[in-house]
Length: 541
Image (cartoon, rainbow, N blue to C red; front, side, top):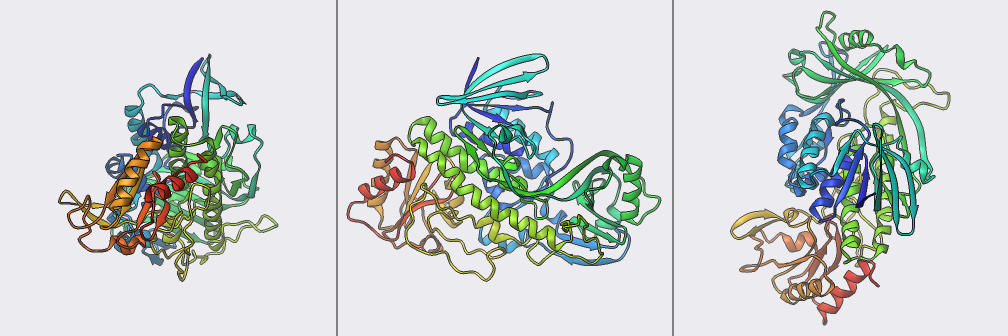
């Protein structure tokens, strides 16, 4: 019998991120993946700024960028009759625009999943040597009051593992959700698609207009070229196929012919490296766990790729979950804290899945009641497509792990595309530039290891009380005052406005960089106030 605090089932980006996050928080884990290695198809590619903030905290941001493409290589979204034919429309996604820098110092990235996973795997293995087992499949799984017992199979060898918790990152067709008998709500079928990985030199038709996506619209073909390295390695999707299509008829030869048709170059040299049919759906689990088992990523929510939210939402799931597991494991949080995972992530997953579905619908990719797809040329994306800044940064949690302060969210014209950073409890803590020991630093770089208490220049009582209470309760907590000559300096006088506090106010930020508590000004007994807030947030009564 092997004992481990956490068993992670699934070695994709979500499972690998969970391993990294837990290791950084001092929680041993064992990750198992049924495939012998990392992904061989590009699959997901777009990594939004919020997820890149998480990768920055994990110490892998630079490696992810090095494995992917620079932003100037994927500036546009293109619609065309073919790559060599007439261009129909060109857009610049808001995610790639420089004005997003006001919200985060961390920009988005494009890194295909088969390039991303080896980066995450190397980092996970460096933090937890021997704790990742590929080519290992989950067999039986039994849960009792004290933990979970799993049977793992690697070839002819069976191993029993005892863990306190299990994170199911085993994908949309994973077994753990079925074992828990958790139903999915939503649309189980939107359309079929053929995912093709190919090698062809397309620079003649793409180098002058570098795009992340080239949508091809023809009367008898709706397809997409997906940029991988921007030169000779591409993804290619045959879109909008009905439920009745025979996917086995898409042989490498047929796929090569479709690539030539979509490129508009009959004599194009094409090498097909892989063909993988798949089905798009828009579904969210009715619960994100049961007992000591938690669903994350596609196991919890299965959304169409229109918008690129799937991988990002999954990584953000485990970012939310990991610190809560760490708190219970190390004893500074009560078991009730784990209930807030479902309360916080499931509403957000439903909102994100609804937006991905809306994108698909606007692009004519959702089957009608008779199963027929709208395949008319000229069906474009809605204005919100790839401009969802409000969705990327705007997760606002309501749960027992947040202490509300009675304030409302700022009103915006379109909550999908627009975002006003705010430190209202439950929101992502805003990015603000500060100075630390003479060097410029973002508030974003303060978060990730434990709780962080930030106070204004007249909030030293908050700071000192925070350090005392953190020590008394055994909670990892750092506390800083922000002002001239203090722990941190605010040269632009922007921090207080961004965080909505007076000079004697304070904000408590959780390890996942979401605000847990805020006081606009001083209180008579700051230590008692902070202890009440922390005990409430952490399920300690």
